[in-house]
Length: 204
Length: 360
Image (cartoon, rainbow over all chains, first blue to last red; front, side):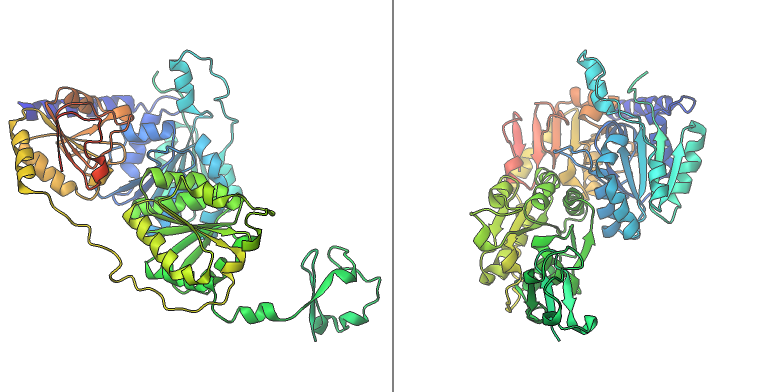
């Protein structure tokens, strides 16, 4: 009885996540990004998370494997943790794929140290969910009935930054291009930034 | 042949290279770099080169932390850390990674501790280098990651009277750290370094040693304190009666749910064995994602602000929670109900947020 209920509830949740991962919408829905990352990231990858909408979506929609590792800023919940966490992971686990998932807000707080990845040839894979906003705070403004104000961010292409500084940069605007871009990033030899145009809205 | 240093810009006039003795230069000669007059130049006695051959406090400090397995120091070099940076350069065991901002150095050390359980160090200069470390160190502090923070301080005689880049560094680090000391005498080098490592690992937090600029460069030679015998075995058990009571409580439950926190990381096989035996679902906190494969049939999702519908429903309707290695943060939202709690941290047990708790 109880086991059957557990199984049914789990199935319903998995179904819901599948439905949410709509690949037809632009800007790209975060649920679809998580689905693609879920399918592509190595079974023994080390994943470093930043803080914000990107982190919330990862926690909710990404299904971790026991053989993967994840590191995040838990109680302090500090933006800017993602890239340094990935640099540390690349040093601690030189034989494993190291992935950083960040938003444009958190990544821009520490982006100068992408140069450190280049200097020491730490092949981190940075996925910037670029929604041109402090998405989580914008969501809070909505919930609390405030105007959306000062939570939009200047639109910057972080893939350009990667290319200019000597790494690999990939810009994704079309959902149909995402899977190939992730493949390319995960097989890149150099540190790489994938800048993904991401829908800032939590739910439609 | 001698060398003379400009005390304004540190340009070095080398008689051997210039082929003209410094004293033979005309009086109106000025520093070719900064234009300072000849009179501000001082003779380089060669002492600077001499002192680099002997061992210093910094060399001993670096060797002592290497004895505890520290492999990496992350930092931005500066005026008040040159002694320590040079000791790392000479070390065959400890590697230095130069970053662009001290916040990154501290985040990296924090992440390294969370991922591996081992200590990495971060190093910043007095004043701005130290304050830039703070966010990353607070991250380590709140998530119980073992980290060694090293900072330079101004020379001892300037601590107090005030000087450039001097702040009250001891007080600044006090709320962040489980161990916080200023190395005031060369004779404290091995003991303070050893204590810092012990506290970082046993209290699971940030240990800070501030090293005044002049102390870093003092000549010093001593025996390194061996690691062996300086770490206690942390394994412990619980009395049988308490285990049996917990087993009875679990046996009586009809809808038990296991909630796993980060403290259960690496114990997924045992968790699954328990879950299978008592037919209970496993729910995790955010940081415990990956404790078991999420596509396992008994995994119901995370709880709290990122909750799956399944986890939320099962926890709501449960008649017993078995909470393993989790705090009770407002993001995880573990409700107050009958609970069996398992944790290695005594302070986490029955910390007032749970009722009817069987703990051990």
